Image 1 (cartoon, protein in one colour):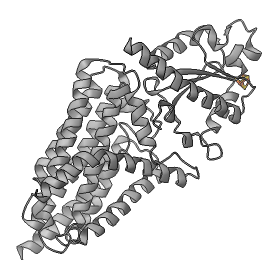
Image 2 (cartoon, chains in turn red, purple; image 1 turned 180 degrees about the horizontal axis):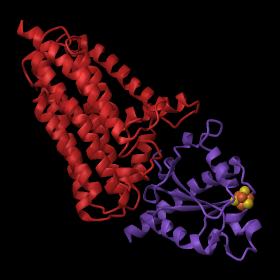
Image 3 (cartoon, helix red, strand yellow; image 1 turned 120 degrees about the horizontal axis):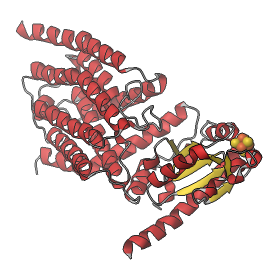
Image 4 (cartoon, helix red, strand yellow; image 1 turned 45 degrees about the vertical axis):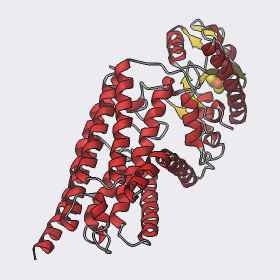
Length: 291
Length: 146
Ligand code: SF4
Protein backbone atom coordinates (compact mmCIF):
# COMPACT_ATOMS: atom_id res chain seq x y z
CA UNK A 1 0.00 0.00 0.00
CA UNK A 2 1.34 3.40 -0.75
CA UNK A 3 1.69 6.11 1.81
CA UNK A 4 -1.34 8.21 0.82
CA UNK A 5 -3.72 5.27 1.29
CA UNK A 6 -2.17 4.53 4.69
CA UNK A 7 -2.52 8.09 5.93
CA UNK A 8 -6.08 8.27 4.60
CA UNK A 9 -7.03 5.12 6.51
CA UNK A 10 -5.23 6.35 9.63
CA UNK A 11 -7.21 9.58 9.44
CA UNK A 12 -10.50 7.76 8.92
CA UNK A 13 -9.98 5.41 11.86
CA UNK A 14 -7.89 7.42 14.31
CA UNK A 15 -9.26 10.86 13.42
CA UNK A 16 -12.15 10.88 15.90
CA UNK A 17 -9.99 9.40 18.67
CA UNK A 18 -7.30 12.01 18.16
CA UNK A 19 -9.93 14.75 17.90
CA UNK A 20 -11.68 13.63 21.08
CA UNK A 21 -8.41 13.40 22.95
CA UNK A 22 -7.46 16.88 21.76
CA UNK A 23 -10.78 18.19 23.04
CA UNK A 24 -10.13 16.47 26.37
CA UNK A 25 -6.64 17.93 26.63
CA UNK A 26 -8.10 21.31 25.75
CA UNK A 27 -10.60 21.08 28.61
CA UNK A 28 -7.91 19.95 31.03
CA UNK A 29 -5.53 22.77 30.10
CA UNK A 30 -8.38 25.29 30.18
CA UNK A 31 -9.34 24.12 33.68
CA UNK A 32 -5.75 24.35 34.87
CA UNK A 33 -5.46 27.86 33.44
CA UNK A 34 -8.52 28.79 35.49
CA UNK A 35 -7.12 27.18 38.63
CA UNK A 36 -9.50 24.22 38.54
CA UNK A 37 -8.83 20.51 38.55
CA UNK A 38 -10.85 19.90 35.42
CA UNK A 39 -12.48 16.77 34.00
CA UNK A 40 -10.69 13.65 32.84
CA UNK A 41 -8.96 13.82 29.46
CA UNK A 42 -11.39 11.16 28.29
CA UNK A 43 -14.40 13.32 29.18
CA UNK A 44 -15.33 14.06 25.52
CA UNK A 45 -15.71 10.30 24.95
CA UNK A 46 -17.95 9.96 28.00
CA UNK A 47 -20.01 12.84 26.63
CA UNK A 48 -20.25 11.17 23.24
CA UNK A 49 -21.33 7.87 24.78
CA UNK A 50 -23.93 9.68 26.83
CA UNK A 51 -25.29 11.49 23.79
CA UNK A 52 -25.65 8.24 21.86
CA UNK A 53 -27.63 6.85 24.78
CA UNK A 54 -30.05 9.74 25.05
CA UNK A 55 -33.42 10.01 23.46
CA UNK A 56 -33.03 12.24 20.44
CA UNK A 57 -35.75 14.79 19.96
CA UNK A 58 -35.97 15.19 16.21
CA UNK A 59 -37.09 18.63 15.13
CA UNK A 60 -37.43 17.64 11.50
CA UNK A 61 -35.95 14.98 9.24
CA UNK A 62 -34.29 17.52 7.01
CA UNK A 63 -32.11 18.65 9.89
CA UNK A 64 -30.83 15.12 10.48
CA UNK A 65 -30.02 14.79 6.80
CA UNK A 66 -28.13 18.08 6.78
CA UNK A 67 -26.11 17.13 9.86
CA UNK A 68 -25.24 13.84 8.20
CA UNK A 69 -24.13 15.84 5.14
CA UNK A 70 -21.92 17.94 7.38
CA UNK A 71 -20.24 14.84 8.79
CA UNK A 72 -19.79 13.21 5.39
CA UNK A 73 -18.25 16.28 3.78
CA UNK A 74 -15.96 16.95 6.72
CA UNK A 75 -14.67 13.39 6.47
CA UNK A 76 -14.37 13.82 2.70
CA UNK A 77 -12.36 17.02 3.22
CA UNK A 78 -9.99 15.34 5.63
CA UNK A 79 -9.60 12.26 3.45
CA UNK A 80 -8.74 14.39 0.43
CA UNK A 81 -6.17 16.25 2.46
CA UNK A 82 -4.52 13.27 4.09
CA UNK A 83 -4.41 11.31 0.86
CA UNK A 84 -2.37 14.12 -0.63
CA UNK A 85 -5.11 15.63 -2.76
CA UNK A 86 -5.64 19.08 -4.21
CA UNK A 87 -5.60 21.83 -1.59
CA UNK A 88 -8.18 23.96 -3.44
CA UNK A 89 -10.60 21.05 -3.63
CA UNK A 90 -10.00 20.39 0.06
CA UNK A 91 -10.97 23.92 1.03
CA UNK A 92 -14.01 23.94 -1.24
CA UNK A 93 -15.22 20.70 0.34
CA UNK A 94 -14.68 22.28 3.75
CA UNK A 95 -16.86 25.23 2.77
CA UNK A 96 -19.55 22.90 1.49
CA UNK A 97 -19.52 21.04 4.81
CA UNK A 98 -19.84 24.37 6.61
CA UNK A 99 -22.86 25.27 4.49
CA UNK A 100 -24.53 21.97 5.40
CA UNK A 101 -24.05 22.82 9.07
CA UNK A 102 -25.47 26.33 8.62
CA UNK A 103 -28.48 24.94 6.77
CA UNK A 104 -29.14 22.40 9.52
CA UNK A 105 -29.35 25.18 12.08
CA UNK A 106 -31.51 27.25 9.73
CA UNK A 107 -33.96 24.43 9.11
CA UNK A 108 -35.14 24.27 12.71
CA UNK A 109 -37.01 27.59 12.50
CA UNK A 110 -35.79 28.40 15.98
CA UNK A 111 -34.74 32.00 16.68
CA UNK A 112 -31.45 30.85 18.23
CA UNK A 113 -30.71 28.52 15.36
CA UNK A 114 -31.35 31.09 12.66
CA UNK A 115 -29.49 33.85 14.47
CA UNK A 116 -26.55 31.51 14.91
CA UNK A 117 -26.60 30.50 11.26
CA UNK A 118 -26.42 34.14 10.21
CA UNK A 119 -23.44 34.58 12.49
CA UNK A 120 -21.85 31.44 11.14
CA UNK A 121 -22.17 32.83 7.59
CA UNK A 122 -20.51 35.98 8.84
CA UNK A 123 -17.70 33.87 10.28
CA UNK A 124 -17.28 32.06 6.99
CA UNK A 125 -17.10 35.40 5.25
CA UNK A 126 -14.37 36.40 7.67
CA UNK A 127 -12.15 33.34 7.39
CA UNK A 128 -12.69 32.26 3.79
CA UNK A 129 -10.30 34.80 2.13
CA UNK A 130 -7.47 33.79 4.44
CA UNK A 131 -8.09 30.10 3.81
CA UNK A 132 -7.91 30.71 0.05
CA UNK A 133 -4.69 32.69 0.50
CA UNK A 134 -3.20 29.66 2.23
CA UNK A 135 -3.88 27.53 -0.83
CA UNK A 136 -2.55 30.22 -3.19
CA UNK A 137 0.51 30.74 -1.01
CA UNK A 138 1.37 27.05 -1.13
CA UNK A 139 0.91 27.12 -4.89
CA UNK A 140 3.23 30.08 -5.44
CA UNK A 141 5.92 28.64 -3.18
CA UNK A 142 5.84 25.05 -4.37
CA UNK A 143 4.25 25.29 -7.81
CA UNK A 144 1.51 22.81 -6.96
CA UNK A 145 -1.81 22.62 -5.15
CA UNK A 146 -1.40 18.92 -4.37
CA UNK A 147 -0.58 18.19 -0.74
CA UNK A 148 1.81 15.40 -1.61
CA UNK A 149 3.86 17.65 -3.93
CA UNK A 150 3.90 20.38 -1.30
CA UNK A 151 5.44 18.00 1.24
CA UNK A 152 8.07 16.78 -1.22
CA UNK A 153 8.83 20.25 -2.54
CA UNK A 154 12.17 20.80 -0.76
CA UNK A 155 13.77 20.35 2.61
CA UNK A 156 12.96 23.89 3.68
CA UNK A 157 9.49 24.01 5.27
CA UNK A 158 6.93 26.21 3.52
CA UNK A 159 6.58 28.38 6.61
CA UNK A 160 10.01 29.85 5.88
CA UNK A 161 8.51 31.47 2.78
CA UNK A 162 5.14 32.35 4.21
CA UNK A 163 5.34 33.25 7.91
CA UNK A 164 2.67 35.92 7.42
CA UNK A 165 0.25 33.48 5.87
CA UNK A 166 0.94 31.07 8.72
CA UNK A 167 0.11 33.75 11.30
CA UNK A 168 -3.03 34.67 9.37
CA UNK A 169 -4.05 31.02 9.33
CA UNK A 170 -3.54 30.79 13.09
CA UNK A 171 -5.83 33.81 13.40
CA UNK A 172 -8.66 32.21 11.42
CA UNK A 173 -8.14 28.96 13.28
CA UNK A 174 -9.57 30.74 16.32
CA UNK A 175 -12.80 31.05 14.33
CA UNK A 176 -12.64 27.52 12.98
CA UNK A 177 -11.93 25.98 16.38
CA UNK A 178 -14.87 27.97 17.77
CA UNK A 179 -12.72 29.57 20.36
CA UNK A 180 -13.24 32.83 22.19
CA UNK A 181 -12.99 35.71 21.13
CA UNK A 182 -14.54 34.54 17.84
CA UNK A 183 -16.97 31.83 18.99
CA UNK A 184 -19.98 33.82 17.87
CA UNK A 185 -22.20 31.19 16.31
CA UNK A 186 -21.62 28.35 18.73
CA UNK A 187 -19.01 27.54 21.27
CA UNK A 188 -17.45 24.54 22.91
CA UNK A 189 -17.84 26.30 26.24
CA UNK A 190 -20.97 25.63 28.25
CA UNK A 191 -22.42 29.05 27.71
CA UNK A 192 -23.22 31.25 24.78
CA UNK A 193 -25.52 34.23 24.72
CA UNK A 194 -27.78 32.44 22.24
CA UNK A 195 -28.29 29.29 24.34
CA UNK A 196 -25.89 27.11 22.35
CA UNK A 197 -26.08 28.72 18.92
CA UNK A 198 -25.98 26.34 15.99
CA UNK A 199 -26.53 23.20 18.05
CA UNK A 200 -29.38 24.55 20.17
CA UNK A 201 -32.03 22.42 18.48
CA UNK A 202 -29.94 19.27 18.24
CA UNK A 203 -30.04 16.54 20.82
CA UNK A 204 -29.02 12.94 21.44
CA UNK A 205 -27.25 11.08 18.66
CA UNK A 206 -27.58 13.92 16.15
CA UNK A 207 -25.63 16.17 18.50
CA UNK A 208 -23.13 13.35 18.88
CA UNK A 209 -22.63 13.33 15.10
CA UNK A 210 -21.87 17.05 15.20
CA UNK A 211 -19.28 16.41 17.92
CA UNK A 212 -17.63 13.69 15.84
CA UNK A 213 -17.58 16.00 12.80
CA UNK A 214 -15.88 18.68 14.84
CA UNK A 215 -13.24 16.23 15.96
CA UNK A 216 -12.57 15.19 12.37
CA UNK A 217 -12.48 18.84 11.37
CA UNK A 218 -10.03 19.83 14.10
CA UNK A 219 -7.64 17.04 13.20
CA UNK A 220 -7.79 18.12 9.56
CA UNK A 221 -7.16 21.78 10.46
CA UNK A 222 -4.16 20.82 12.58
CA UNK A 223 -3.02 18.82 9.57
CA UNK A 224 -3.00 22.05 7.55
CA UNK A 225 -0.93 23.66 10.31
CA UNK A 226 1.44 20.73 10.02
CA UNK A 227 1.70 21.24 6.26
CA UNK A 228 3.45 24.54 6.89
CA UNK A 229 6.27 22.69 8.64
CA UNK A 230 6.38 19.43 6.71
CA UNK A 231 9.31 18.55 4.49
CA UNK A 232 10.38 15.35 2.80
CA UNK A 233 12.86 14.51 5.58
CA UNK A 234 11.80 11.85 8.07
CA UNK A 235 12.59 14.02 11.09
CA UNK A 236 10.19 16.69 9.91
CA UNK A 237 7.44 14.51 11.42
CA UNK A 238 8.81 15.42 14.86
CA UNK A 239 8.97 19.10 13.95
CA UNK A 240 5.38 18.91 12.70
CA UNK A 241 4.11 17.30 15.91
CA UNK A 242 5.90 19.83 18.12
CA UNK A 243 4.80 22.87 16.12
CA UNK A 244 1.23 21.64 15.84
CA UNK A 245 1.15 21.13 19.62
CA UNK A 246 2.50 24.64 20.19
CA UNK A 247 -0.03 26.14 17.76
CA UNK A 248 -2.86 24.29 19.50
CA UNK A 249 -1.66 25.48 22.88
CA UNK A 250 -1.60 29.06 21.58
CA UNK A 251 -5.23 28.70 20.47
CA UNK A 252 -6.20 27.51 23.95
CA UNK A 253 -4.32 30.40 25.52
CA UNK A 254 -6.11 32.92 23.29
CA UNK A 255 -9.39 31.21 24.13
CA UNK A 256 -8.82 31.77 27.82
CA UNK A 257 -7.41 35.27 27.63
CA UNK A 258 -9.85 37.14 25.41
CA UNK A 259 -13.58 37.70 25.87
CA UNK A 260 -16.01 37.20 23.00
CA UNK A 261 -16.21 40.14 20.59
CA UNK A 262 -18.98 41.41 18.33
CA UNK A 263 -19.25 40.23 14.74
CA UNK A 264 -18.16 43.50 13.13
CA UNK A 265 -14.91 43.52 15.07
CA UNK A 266 -14.28 39.93 14.09
CA UNK A 267 -14.91 40.62 10.42
CA UNK A 268 -12.82 43.79 10.32
CA UNK A 269 -9.88 42.46 12.27
CA UNK A 270 -9.77 39.19 10.36
CA UNK A 271 -9.81 40.95 7.01
CA UNK A 272 -7.15 43.39 8.14
CA UNK A 273 -4.96 40.50 9.26
CA UNK A 274 -5.65 38.75 5.96
CA UNK A 275 -4.67 41.87 4.08
CA UNK A 276 -1.59 42.75 6.09
CA UNK A 277 -0.18 39.33 6.91
CA UNK A 278 -1.54 37.35 3.99
CA UNK A 279 -1.53 39.59 0.95
CA UNK A 280 1.78 41.32 1.71
CA UNK A 281 3.42 37.95 2.31
CA UNK A 282 1.98 36.74 -0.97
CA UNK A 283 3.32 39.78 -2.84
CA UNK A 284 6.77 39.33 -1.36
CA UNK A 285 7.01 35.68 -2.36
CA UNK A 286 5.73 36.39 -5.87
CA UNK A 287 8.39 39.08 -6.23
CA UNK A 288 11.10 36.69 -5.07
CA UNK A 289 9.84 34.04 -7.48
CA UNK A 290 9.83 36.54 -10.36
CA UNK A 291 13.51 37.28 -9.91
CA UNK B 1 -16.66 1.91 32.59
CA UNK B 2 -18.70 3.92 30.14
CA UNK B 3 -21.82 5.14 31.82
CA UNK B 4 -24.39 7.78 31.03
CA UNK B 5 -23.68 9.22 34.45
CA UNK B 6 -20.10 10.06 33.50
CA UNK B 7 -21.31 13.07 31.59
CA UNK B 8 -24.18 14.77 33.38
CA UNK B 9 -25.09 18.08 31.82
CA UNK B 10 -27.02 20.37 34.02
CA UNK B 11 -29.69 22.96 33.37
CA UNK B 12 -30.22 25.52 36.07
CA UNK B 13 -33.56 27.32 36.26
CA UNK B 14 -34.36 30.03 38.76
CA UNK B 15 -38.05 29.73 39.69
CA UNK B 16 -38.87 32.36 42.25
CA UNK B 17 -35.72 32.04 44.27
CA UNK B 18 -34.36 34.95 46.30
CA UNK B 19 -31.09 34.33 44.37
CA UNK B 20 -29.42 32.96 47.48
CA UNK B 21 -29.54 29.43 46.15
CA UNK B 22 -28.53 30.51 42.65
CA UNK B 23 -25.36 32.06 43.95
CA UNK B 24 -24.57 28.81 45.71
CA UNK B 25 -25.26 26.84 42.52
CA UNK B 26 -22.86 29.06 40.61
CA UNK B 27 -20.35 28.74 43.45
CA UNK B 28 -20.15 25.05 42.55
CA UNK B 29 -18.52 26.03 39.25
CA UNK B 30 -15.75 28.05 40.87
CA UNK B 31 -12.22 26.68 41.28
CA UNK B 32 -12.92 25.82 44.93
CA UNK B 33 -15.69 23.30 44.19
CA UNK B 34 -15.20 22.76 40.43
CA UNK B 35 -18.08 20.47 39.48
CA UNK B 36 -16.61 20.11 36.00
CA UNK B 37 -14.21 17.52 37.40
CA UNK B 38 -17.21 15.14 37.47
CA UNK B 39 -17.90 15.99 33.85
CA UNK B 40 -20.75 18.25 34.85
CA UNK B 41 -21.43 21.09 32.47
CA UNK B 42 -23.78 23.91 33.34
CA UNK B 43 -25.52 24.10 29.99
CA UNK B 44 -28.23 26.60 29.14
CA UNK B 45 -30.09 24.31 26.78
CA UNK B 46 -32.87 21.94 27.89
CA UNK B 47 -32.30 19.77 24.82
CA UNK B 48 -28.74 19.06 25.94
CA UNK B 49 -29.47 18.67 29.64
CA UNK B 50 -29.69 15.53 31.77
CA UNK B 51 -30.25 17.13 35.14
CA UNK B 52 -32.84 19.83 35.70
CA UNK B 53 -31.85 21.85 38.72
CA UNK B 54 -34.47 24.26 40.04
CA UNK B 55 -34.17 26.85 42.75
CA UNK B 56 -37.13 28.67 44.23
CA UNK B 57 -40.79 27.78 44.40
CA UNK B 58 -43.41 27.59 41.70
CA UNK B 59 -45.80 30.45 41.03
CA UNK B 60 -48.47 31.02 38.41
CA UNK B 61 -46.03 32.70 36.07
CA UNK B 62 -43.28 30.13 35.98
CA UNK B 63 -45.49 27.06 36.14
CA UNK B 64 -45.80 26.76 32.36
CA UNK B 65 -42.11 27.56 31.88
CA UNK B 66 -41.01 24.77 34.21
CA UNK B 67 -43.38 22.32 32.52
CA UNK B 68 -42.13 23.29 29.10
CA UNK B 69 -38.45 23.01 29.99
CA UNK B 70 -39.12 19.62 31.56
CA UNK B 71 -40.91 18.37 28.47
CA UNK B 72 -38.12 19.61 26.20
CA UNK B 73 -35.48 17.57 27.99
CA UNK B 74 -34.75 14.23 26.33
CA UNK B 75 -34.88 11.04 28.43
CA UNK B 76 -33.29 9.93 30.71
CA UNK B 77 -33.57 13.00 32.92
CA UNK B 78 -33.50 13.79 36.63
CA UNK B 79 -35.00 16.74 38.49
CA UNK B 80 -33.21 18.21 41.50
CA UNK B 81 -34.98 20.76 43.71
CA UNK B 82 -32.38 22.97 45.41
CA UNK B 83 -33.23 24.98 48.50
CA UNK B 84 -36.17 24.69 50.81
CA UNK B 85 -38.19 26.99 48.53
CA UNK B 86 -37.93 24.51 45.67
CA UNK B 87 -38.69 21.62 48.04
CA UNK B 88 -41.94 22.95 49.47
CA UNK B 89 -42.17 26.71 49.11
CA UNK B 90 -40.03 27.58 52.14
CA UNK B 91 -40.37 31.04 53.57
CA UNK B 92 -42.56 32.09 50.66
CA UNK B 93 -45.00 29.22 51.19
CA UNK B 94 -47.89 31.39 52.39
CA UNK B 95 -47.52 34.07 49.73
CA UNK B 96 -50.64 34.51 47.61
CA UNK B 97 -48.76 33.80 44.38
CA UNK B 98 -46.75 30.74 45.44
CA UNK B 99 -48.19 27.36 44.61
CA UNK B 100 -45.57 25.44 46.57
CA UNK B 101 -42.54 23.30 45.76
CA UNK B 102 -41.44 22.16 42.33
CA UNK B 103 -43.18 18.81 42.82
CA UNK B 104 -46.51 20.59 42.41
CA UNK B 105 -45.94 20.67 38.66
CA UNK B 106 -43.26 18.13 37.68
CA UNK B 107 -41.94 14.99 39.37
CA UNK B 108 -38.90 15.74 41.55
CA UNK B 109 -36.29 13.02 42.12
CA UNK B 110 -33.87 14.64 44.56
CA UNK B 111 -34.62 17.21 47.24
CA UNK B 112 -31.75 19.35 48.52
CA UNK B 113 -32.95 21.28 51.59
CA UNK B 114 -31.23 24.31 53.10
CA UNK B 115 -31.64 28.06 53.00
CA UNK B 116 -29.50 28.67 51.15
CA UNK B 117 -28.43 25.15 50.22
CA UNK B 118 -24.67 24.92 50.66
CA UNK B 119 -22.51 24.08 47.65
CA UNK B 120 -21.50 20.83 49.37
CA UNK B 121 -25.09 19.69 49.70
CA UNK B 122 -25.94 20.81 46.16
CA UNK B 123 -23.07 18.70 44.87
CA UNK B 124 -24.23 15.84 47.07
CA UNK B 125 -27.68 16.12 45.51
CA UNK B 126 -26.24 16.26 42.01
CA UNK B 127 -24.09 13.18 42.68
CA UNK B 128 -27.23 11.33 43.86
CA UNK B 129 -28.97 12.53 40.71
CA UNK B 130 -26.11 11.13 38.65
CA UNK B 131 -26.60 7.70 40.21
CA UNK B 132 -30.29 7.92 39.37
CA UNK B 133 -29.47 8.74 35.74
CA UNK B 134 -27.93 5.31 35.24
CA UNK B 135 -30.96 3.58 36.73
CA UNK B 136 -33.28 5.60 34.53
CA UNK B 137 -31.16 4.84 31.52
CA UNK B 138 -31.68 1.14 32.17
CA UNK B 139 -35.44 1.51 32.40
CA UNK B 140 -35.54 3.68 29.28
CA UNK B 141 -33.56 0.98 27.50
CA UNK B 142 -36.08 -1.64 28.65
CA UNK B 143 -39.01 0.44 27.47
CA UNK B 144 -37.38 0.83 24.07
CA UNK B 145 -36.79 -2.92 23.89
CA UNK B 146 -40.37 -3.83 24.76
S1 SF4 C 1 -34.12 28.41 50.04
FE1 SF4 C 1 -33.53 30.34 51.01
S2 SF4 C 1 -31.76 31.02 49.83
FE2 SF4 C 1 -32.79 29.46 48.61
S3 SF4 C 1 -34.18 30.59 47.31
FE3 SF4 C 1 -35.32 30.02 49.12
S4 SF4 C 1 -35.14 31.78 50.49
FE4 SF4 C 1 -33.55 31.99 48.93
